[in-house]
Length: 93
Image 1 (cartoon, rainbow, N blue to C red):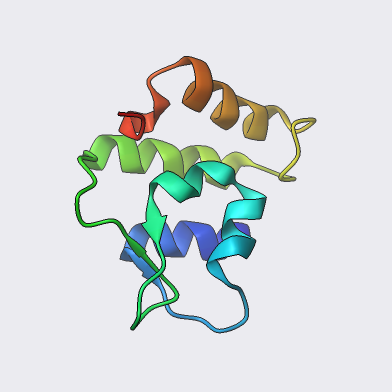
Image 2 (spheres, rainbow, N blue to C red; image 1 turned 90 degrees about the vertical axis):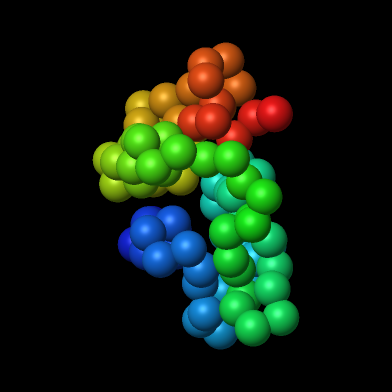
């Protein structure tokens, strides 16, 4: 799932049929702020998202470090903590 999330963030969409948008959001809830369900694609990055390239790269880099999508994983906890208490990867408005 980690590879699918990273690919979706890099490409800007996920067009697969194996997982739904809710499956992505269950694994990492902050993706609700990045993606929306689309007619053509299962997920696509929101059009009105004021998100810089650096912030996207930072999130992708942090997701690549995750071993297990659980708060017991240090890198997963870092992502959640940065989203909740830090700059929010530029996603919080």
